Length: 99
Image (cartoon, rainbow, N blue to C red; front, side, top):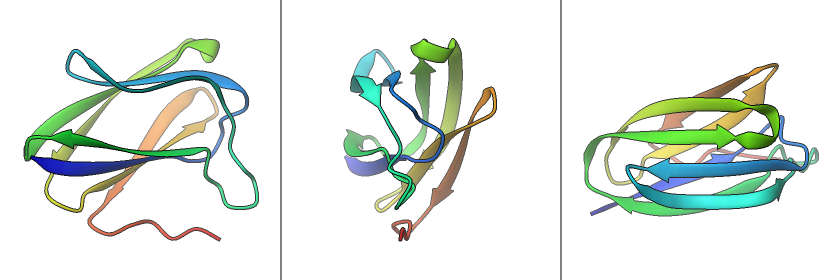
């Protein structure tokens, strides 16, 4: 198994968020808010098999749903943000740097 690091970043404001990998809930909260000082709302990790996986991100409070494809290797990091009326993401092989 590989550990996938996920960071909910910009644009969250008291939102109800669920992140699933396959049929399993990796993260769920009804009050996700970005801390503007650092641009981070929440961090969590999930153990997954190496290779392609899809994170299903639901922001129920805004009616947003997105599938985020990720090619997982040891040390893969995913940043998920809300930009306008869309869920956007970025990936990296190293941890993201925040203020």
